[in-house]
Picture (cartoon, one colour):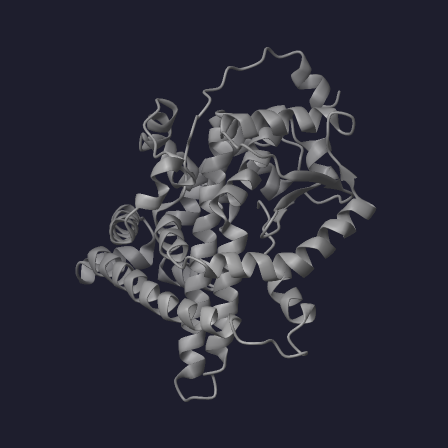
Length: 381
């Protein structure tokens, strides 16, 4: 029996339509703080979308148009139905194009700056049931709605400029710190998209099953949700400081959190009551996005780090707490760092706008944009 056969017999679940919802409703505080600051670079984001979309986005879309299946009511109708349902729940007014490409790996990605589209691997179609697939499609719509690809590309451009300072004695160290901070933001962006997927499907069990399948394959007949969450707890609190250092090594340069950590964060978001409040209609609306306060979002990001370190059972964090108010110190550092990043991004954005108004040299063609563009693709896992 296929996933579609199995779910076809189940009664349709009624989901709450989140009319007018802003992406800020599902964005992790650390992600939301960075995005709010980046959105203040008005004009620079339009420049990036226009320039990179002119070349790379069109080329990538043509490659999928030529070698993948474009989903609509005639092709992969089950996927199209779930896609439109997820978009309707998240109040996505314009559906991005959706393609299915041949691959045995459970993966999907949101691609595009000016006109984003979503690519889904065939493994997802075959191995995910309706509720899990709806959550995955909601995850990718969350990336699109938050503009993650746009702002990741902006940060990569600015980071490349910063690389020009690497010849200075402190340049390489500063650059590595910037890249590490970018990776930390990207990991939080994935947590944001997980929350969007949950809101699209409104089935917490299905969202957890999706993460379990991403971790261990599509067959859950021999896998238990409670045991998987026990793994997450052991990963968070088990071992000693040596294990903490190994975790830092594993995650510092990764763009995605590990699956058990994602499951634990999603569970914590649900238990905090935030998920329930959104379903009850208590969420920010799109028409208030322009009035979002950068300083308030930075404070919220710092508070989020303080709370996370305060409840963390990690041995290294516990040691910091015993040595002093480590959680508070780290939270203050995160908040101050966000404020400094905002100032740095503002200066860099102004410089970029001035540079864009200058005549381009023949060397500044599409090849330059291709690397930055290819790095901007997102996966779900």
